[in-house]
Image (cartoon, rainbow, N blue to C red; front, side, top):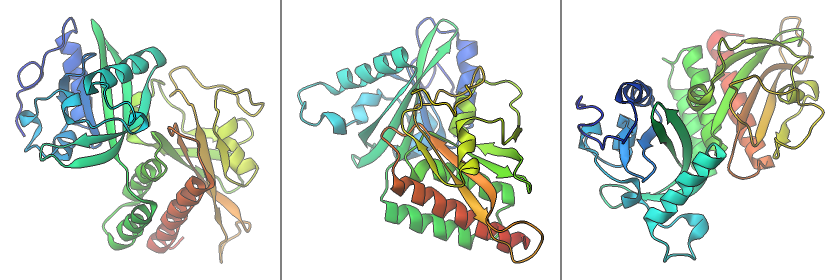
Length: 316
């Protein structure tokens, strides 16, 4: 992969400070997700290697496009086929800037003219001198293929560490539920504390909290602790609606529209842990449509599978 950089391979944005942009660009190129950065006209400013490979380019430095060149009609607007693609993209950009972000189903054509069903997230990035749009793309696959892929990956790769397994499962939890962010937390033996183990890559890039805590008292946390207290999955499809269980979010926390989390139970054959002890809780958020019982089951299956692998690998 070459190193031509902002302003050489890609269209330099007007008025945006290039030093600030290059720093942000590095976070994109270091991310394994399919990500690009566009201006408010839909022109590509930068992208990472995953984006280049997704569109079947050789590498980042051969990509020089406007995003709408690779788009089919948006799936939720198929009847309005006369609307130019450029206008559709710019409408989404406007929605993202005014609303703090937006997401939608889409079909993208790659460099080989193959149509790729996907889900797209637009997030405004306010840099010195102007606003860019970060675009994250995820494949949409069938539930059958999702579960088959999970089972294969978790059971065949013995080289993975516990951290790699957990990180992979966090990202898979986001993907199989069509969410945008996810997290995983382990619960103490006496159920009084939650240890936040990790966030998805997308959540870490969006979250502006400084010195994020990793340990929380179960009794004091808000809505995301209900899965432990109620000992069952909890779906919240309107997060902005008043709820007595919510206790607010810290400054810089990712904005939430929908949220779902599930507990994983441990029934040990040895030790003094009580039967049906909640060993961990996994959560996802900000799906474009409502979470369903199917999402709950998929996330439960994934996390139960992860815990089985943990027990087998580490003789827990």
